[in-house]
Image (cartoon, rainbow, N blue to C red; front, side, top):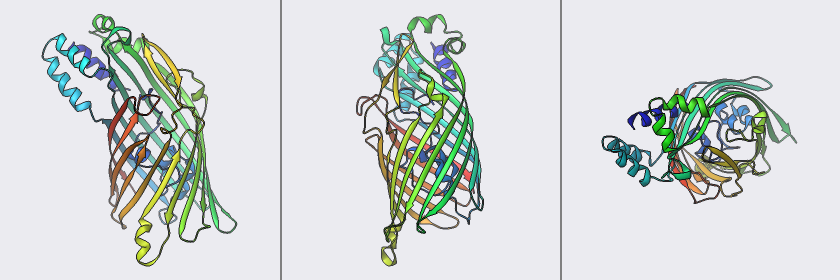
Length: 388
């Protein structure tokens, strides 16, 4: 049984699974810390949400270099599960089955993302290039029978993203940013529901058994387009509207669990532009996003190693909103907090930046089922980066 558990851990190391949750190409604090389709300064990792945001790099900054941006996230209940399982390993097979029974139906998620990039603001447009690698796994213990013993789904996405953005003045007052991005992605995915027989018959070489029978390899080329409209009609309020269409291309034509869905997304941000003592409120911005407005995201389940797709039409899972408050902003140090609602559950995070380094910590809750409240997974993300 120890060999079985070690094999599952080995398999997990090559696996963003989330095939029973909304797809994310890049898992980071910026992805879920608050609604961010239109908000925030220019940074190339924001292009995973809207390529038009790239042009928000200021003329003073010129270059943006993201040498190494790393994020690690996991389910809050994983520590308890790991401790109980470690104790059971030293006992009998029945002890291990008792642990599986205790956590029956619970979801355990692990993710890591690495992203490096460079962007440059030219006189007429802004360009950026980045390399990313996102890995992770979802595990769900089951009591057995038709549901199997351990349901495991995972994937590894390795790719390169090329983005360009440009802005135009409208009516001698407003500004519209337009962006386009292309991603080339190499993916390795698997999904299986291991039966007790599979576990016992292949316990000496379970990792290779799963790879030989359930691994899928694919390469994709996807297109992202987006726009951000900065409306300056109101004297004391900066208002931005955003739209993005993500993952256009062949990746959405795969009618299996590893499809990368095409989504259309809308966003809105307001930020005060006050003077005098009231200028303190300028440090806050409020944003709301409506992700996947045409409900193209799907859910999936695996029974007897047959994966079934089914629709996800929950509106609350798609509307996210939040507030960003800048506590301190100087040339050498910056700090801000993010508070909001993601999939109808709170999200909270803090970000600290020094001259060339940045650290952030965020908690959010992912819904694993097609309806809010059926199966929720509270997670924590820690991100660190070297950038200037």
